[in-house]
Image (cartoon, rainbow, N blue to C red; front, side, top):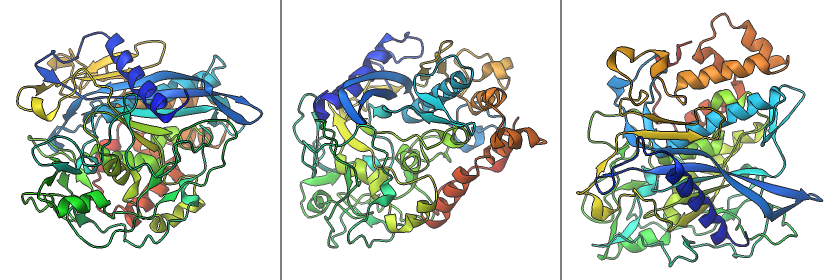
Length: 498
């Protein structure tokens, strides 16, 4: 692949093709229902003389998720058997975690793993040349969906004409800038310039204070081979892009709406007609017309994963470094500036200095948009004609039972009432089953500090095992205390299952 356009098109088309190959069970009815799709693509790059050769790499879909539903607070269960959040991005990420467990177990079983090598401390490390990319057919709910649009139109302001099916918007890095595919330089080694906005400060979309347009970039070595993935860049935390200011001063501009609610303690939306309908940069819960949910929006969850890694707490005990996404590709009506703001740009790096002493950092994935269209995508024109599909589809690259479907209830599709609450009713990506996979891995890893700590637990509950990931949860606790103070947390009783 020679350009970013080729790369982006490859990621999106592979996910769309994989979804088409899966059975129709759980998929929407054509012309009647809609859903969202997300997926994770593995890229394997051949290494010669410590140089990445991207044209020799291979791309393979390893996880897929679709879904649009989320349970209300009263429907949450303490046994870990159901899926509380079935948005496509969350389902795909949970499917990816299941894939990682399988690969880790295969590594220690001496069978084979396409992505991991063994380390002497009982952990695994990614093989040289392995990276992952995330695709979603819709803009993730929450902050990323707030962007200026022209009145009576559905085109974001920050959108240019597509090239080879993709759109690059406000790209400040030269398109022929080069760097290694497997860039792992921590984003916390960069120095933001004139970044003075406090991290907990948000602004109405039409606020007209001066905007700092200085961008910072990751410090990366330049690869001598030709590889045109651009260096990611970001705007200063929680400051507004010029196009949003333009919208505030022009009656022809409005702002795209989200149903995601601002959390208590965050600045609240003004809900007035026009471009200051929403605040930007706020933490939000997922949208929905039914019972209120305690689940954070997908924009906020992706922000978290870009700090703590996409592998989760339990898997973090089994790998040497966090697993981050190299790029995020978004379909549908999407705005690059809003995506960057939501996924990392609203964070003040000065407030994340404490991450220097951990293995975590604010990762800046390359953000790209694609015009490859998902078959069941819901546009604004379809809003009153299509109904959401209540099922959630999960697939990952494992030898057995890779595909399954969850019902709107969060149980496996087809579960009869009398079997609800039993392990057989639970999907393979439920917390209960992913925890079971963690315990299976504990049986095959060699003697090490983690295994000793696990065996020493009197009660091997989900909560107690999560506490084994000390650095992960200490880091996340610090992030919440110092930066994301209004983040919604669920009851600790939901983690007591064994």
